[in-house]
Image (cartoon, rainbow, N blue to C red):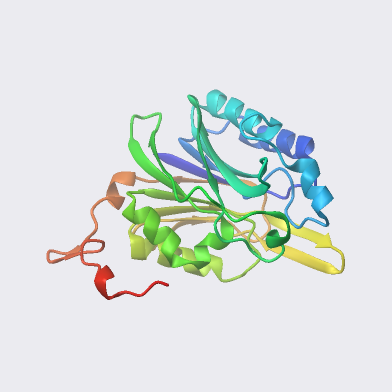
Length: 268
């Protein structure tokens, strides 16, 4: 199957303009799975809670999810994308999973980074895994984590234990260590990972964040299949076989997940 990750430089708070730009970028895309960055249409480094409120949307009724649903139908693919979600309880940093059948589900970011804690609630939906079918008929299981979730190996491991073949990773990365770590997350869990990051800079008060780009796809051996540069605006395309993630034998006598010793681990 074919997978894709969009890397772009969204304009701060310009949801309509960013949606139009992404629509133009993916209009002729031929892919089974498309991953867009975290908060891909809103911007990230919010200057105030009022700014977040102007771009937060209900799911699925908001304009961003509705456009994603249209693209999924038009392209006949699954899309994973991040947006600020409005709920009666508060705001969440959320990723939606959509395909031509509609909204498949949502994931709310568990591990909030830096000033995200000023605006968003920590995720409360656990770690859902979605059973998807590519246009070719290939079946695969899709897990989702968002940006800073990568820093906690328990997330990717949990998604692997839940049966994920592929982990989609919408991101707004500023830490330079993530592109080095993602091959390890893929290797230690024997999964494919697809990190879609953004580029550019944003300023809030006297602080500036620079986003590092380098979107990448990693395979279950820990190899980088494709990787983008720090500053390009483009779509990364890779061919993968999700079935290769399911054989977790390391040797004839070792299985990556079956050989774990949770009776001896302390995780809290």
